[in-house]
Image (cartoon, rainbow, N blue to C red):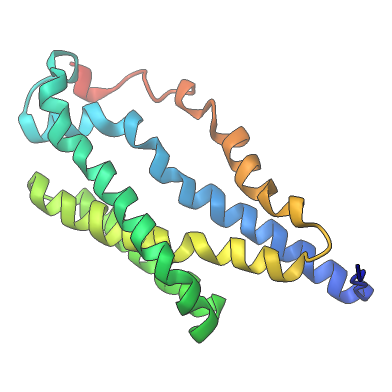
Amino acid sequence: MSSVRASSSTSVNRWIIAIAAFCMQLVLGAVYAWSVFLKPVASLYYHIPAKQLTSAQLQPANLTFSIALLGLGITAGFGGYFNNRFGPRVVATVGGVCYGLGLVLAGLAPNLFILYLTYGILGGIGLGLAYIVPLAMLIKWFPDRRGFITLPYRARRICTSRLDTFGATTNNPCDA
């Protein structure tokens, strides 16, 4: 077994990569907050107060999340190839732009079909491209700490696990 020894400047740089990977995962993990926004979003499209929505009325709006995760999964499969071919900066930038544009356009979506296209497909493609970059970079920059690679993913889950309890359910104008 060979040990990998890094110079001090490389060692500092790789920790910056780890912090950047954590920040990327924190931002990209916002997709998992969909359940917090599901009732207010469905309420806007059905013009019914959120408390009166049935589970059958929530299903079409919830399909948006499924489409986004499908886009994430399919695109992440190609993301590794794009990462090797074009580099992590290009792939992360394109992924971030697609995800951000998908979120902004979803806010302007007049109906569920447009929401599927914007948040689901465009946002899902952005997620898939951007998710693969931190993982690939951590594998390359931390060959001596393979178990460390999962830290940004675990830390994101720890940091965001209780965010739904901080004001997301109070003073919701759609509950009126």
